[in-house]
Length: 193
Image (tube, rainbow, N blue to C red; front, top):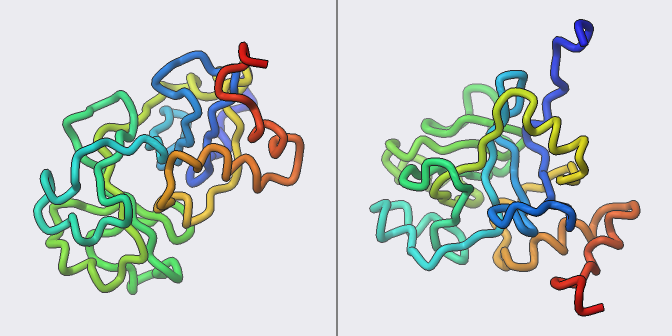
């Protein structure tokens, strides 16, 4: 393995849970990878809305969050911390990137929730707030990929702000141009077949 020093980064890609993935935390999860390198990986689950309104926990951000305007459970780690993921149309290149926003991939970036919301309001295409995140230690995600737990697919900016998160798993699979599109038809309970 000595030649494999560099991990090819999956930052900005989606991990889509395969039907084989047994962890209930990630059943039919669609995870946006915000960071992936040899030190590990970090992402947020895009399709786990909670009943909590963004405005109830983060003053000023509620009206900027897209529909549904609730906090999403980003994953099982650090559930008491909030992460903001925002799409800036046009990808805000160089010095035009708004204060308080850090590009992750293309037009998708992380928002510093300490920034006054009004500084970002005009630039934001969409915003979603996540409580907690999904994390993997060094090599852990690679092991899960080898085991067939996840499909890795390209993200689209609209995935972050899908107005119907309960349909996101199927929608992401359905747009793939290969056998993954067939997985989208996988029944919720295979024992019912």
